[in-house]
Image 1 (cartoon, rainbow, N blue to C red):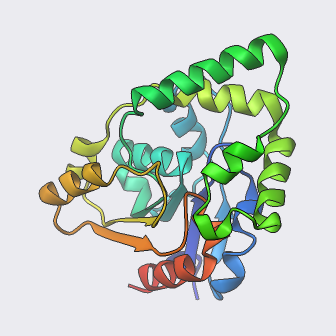
Image 2 (cartoon, rainbow, N blue to C red; image 1 turned 90 degrees about the horizontal axis):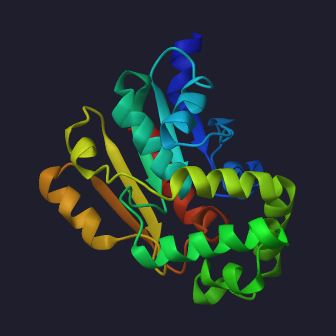
Amino acid sequence: MTAREDEKRSLYMIPGTMCDERLWRELLPRLPGVVAHHLVIPRGSTVSELVAGLVAQLPDWPVNLFGFSLGGYLASALATAHPDRVRRLFVCSNSPCALPEEELKQRRQLLNWVSRHGYSGISDRKIAAMLGPANRERADIAQTMRAMDAHLGEEALVSQLGATSEREDLGDSLAKVPLPITFCFGEYDTLVTRSWLDALRKHRPDTAVHEVPEAGHMLPLEQPEGLAAILDRWIAA
């Protein structure tokens, strides 16, 4: 098998805000035969700078690109700016549009607090808000989220929030980009805008959308079996 043939089972994966490769620890064992490549979200002050740093981590040929949460937005931005580098796009737990004003307000408040007092880590309240009801008492998920957050620390938080809070709505660009697009999110994910996805599907009826039951925002940790099944079919198609 040539390197290019092997790439058909390769998956280039962009994590979310304050997430590292531990995000995939429950997912990847359920994808036998898939060669995973974890992409690190680089430092930068704009989305364009982050995208440039991600493109630098890719091979020269088109890849299967997967992005979770913030990584889903960045994967979408990369695909629309560099469609020649993407074979197909899978957006997990994200709708690539501008953030609601309430979320922008919360981010500004957090960055202001951190600048004055420092960052003491992700709160129990924030963890619970990102999980589906059945998973809010799962200590294993909470522990993984805290560990990733602590490992990346204040500098990463400030960089990621500062560079990506003011986001362009990518709907028009995604409607025109010449590659297959799939979206997947949890049943209880309040950070995904369903109406935005409905509008995109009106312009691109070929857009695939999957909702996974009994999960909130942290889909790779909450329902790795369901996500893996969808991903496996997507890669094999």
